[in-house]
Length: 440
Ligand code: GAP
Image (cartoon, rainbow, N blue to C red; front, side, top):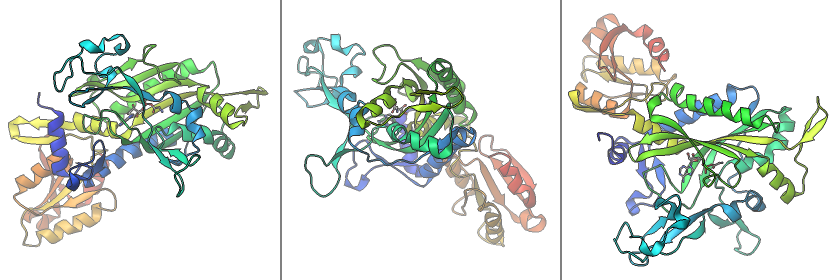
């Protein structure tokens, strides 16, 4: 297969998208740092999500809640008791596995007959034991009982505990939504496949508060909208996307119905986003644990109820990996690697290259930089042959290449190169800004 995760990892390091955390210390497992192109791409994706999930809907607003919250929130949410993964150890080579890596039906496995995938020993795997995925810390200078706090494993709870404040302040009427982008932390047993499963990651979640009874229809609407986002906003190839419905034994402790949007990665079909019907599970638990009435008053019908919640929950880093994987293209005919990002999310929109470093061409190129850079990310490159400069930008996924040549000095025109077709068109400089703007 042309596309392997190893090739994508290597390109990401080479071009400054993503680096292993703490590289000079030998790395820190399951955490990644985003380089200059990675952060541009990540910001472009999260801004598209924010626009789509808040500004496009009059009844959805934003929130930014803290990573640390009152520890009782995690008891109420069920995360202290039920946010566990089944852990299996090999007594021989000390490797660790999630039991469900061996089979979805792992409780019925006879572990004495199973071979360790790493050292090959049979009979030395322990029975699965539950391992809580939340990171614990202490708030304040003294580590004592009562100061324990958790790094949030999902952003959703920050929305639930603020829902009445947000609803009141913005005078929202059911159905309405609250959206949030932020970091989440999970002490994953096995972290692999690059940024797919990490211990520190970002979620983009939207919680939609609905009247009970309308939830079954509303989840269908959000399923469809979220699926279309990958195709229409991120430009993902539709045949590489599908739904997976959670069966009885897959459902999270809070969910009545759950659908994953999956992408076909080089390591197989895997979840990138979940759409869940959480019913009134979370609000009723917070009502019970906080002692506060969290019901919503429906004025026209003069009734009170606890809203049901339809959740759309996407991982920003997984979305980024989806975009990177989908864009990776080995153009064998021209012996180059191209990241075919949709121009709207490409980290850099254009590279400006003077053909030579003399005869006034660099100055002309700088004039063009000044025209374009207030509007979008552009870079200037005069290093090496023009072919090499373009190939570097093909790997960075830059959709447009602007060459300033001797003719540019005489008639104020440039050539505009298309990354995917490599076709070049000559254009007057004064239409360049609008030409690129119309495509991003
Ligand atoms: N609030 C619901 C919730 O957190 P989830 O299915 O556990 O549901 C939602 O997570 C999304 O968060 C996933 O679809 C995935 O994109 C992302 N995610 C979860 N765990 C992750 C991890 N360890 N590393 C990267 N992304 C993760």
